[in-house]
Image 1: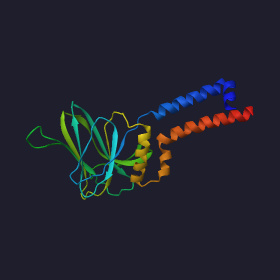
Image 2: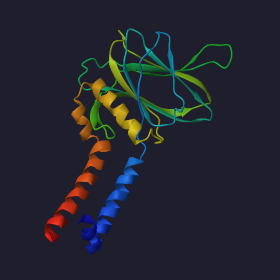
Image 3: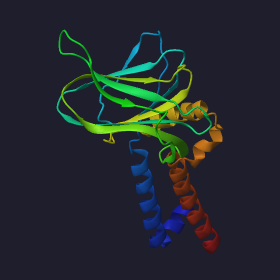
Image 4: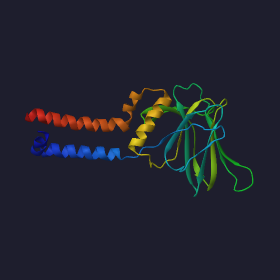
Length: 222
């Protein structure tokens, strides 16, 4: 019955085809990866393979800092934002960025990102549909070399979120949905809030729109 309806209504057919096209494009859209940091040992260093790629790391400090390492092959822009859940009353999450020596020598301190002196402001993360508090940040050109970024607090117990990079390459739709569920759990919010994320809301809207259009047309022709 629905096929006859579509054949008799070119406008409806075009609308459905357009909605399906948009839906397919959305499914293939890349989303910023959500990486949950958990240490296997207190001395573990987390490697960031591409510091230019937009991605979010999150975790809870467990008595020791979380240390990230990345390599800059060519001089270029490096961006990092330190954030935390709104529910966290301790606004002390900080970081220090250092450059490893080329051979023997001492490390070079590049920047200190102080959470104590930062102005923590609400920021909306569009991909997840969550509001976090954004604190200290760093945005500058780094020369080639190996760098380490250490996230810490005075007692190393607080939860944090760290956004790095600017280039949107992404992890793919299905992978992002799996990561999103873990991120919601980390924030202590209900899994139902996943539906407020554009990653789920937009496809759901397309499905409802197509279903409603077909239903309404069938009622008219019925």
